[in-house]
Length: 244
Image (cartoon, rainbow, N blue to C red):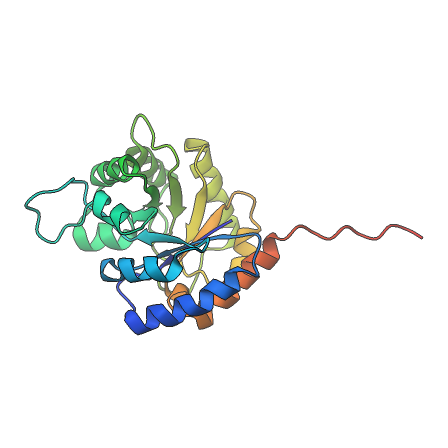
């Protein structure tokens, strides 16, 4: 079960040190989850040093589809991989909204990520009331005709992100089944106001392979209870005692 922490444009050096110093010993007590922490570009190198030797993966929040050259402000997949990242979030709704990113660009970024050994986490999302065809189009265009082996897909309903109101379990199950019908070989995560209070119910949905966590992932005070809730929810059920 994957837990992807997306810090977005938040945090600082002190906060990252405190977070990692608390997260590392906590992870040693958890047995049913895999965690990746995706921090802003300036903190990737420090996060690599702090997480070295642990099972916690380091991730970036975006990359350029370009390899190198005169592209001021862009960061390539090779650069991200060079400082220790092993995964990258691509096509997040905030990138689509704030920077006008479309599926073709996201596909090119995913190809570059794969070429440099990064696991793409491809985000797709729909506005409230939109047809499933919106998600179908996003998934197919992001993966491309030949697919992106090893990529994960994160479903994030736009009306749930940052609102404190996650999608209900029936909606999550329906949309994840739909995505799995299009991309059966890819794990599908849920993202959108995931908290310690609702995550256990979310990860018990059979079609859910993990969660993409935003605001609740930035501080250990909110992230640790979430991790504990997922680990407990995913633990094998104890065998019932038989009759005596």
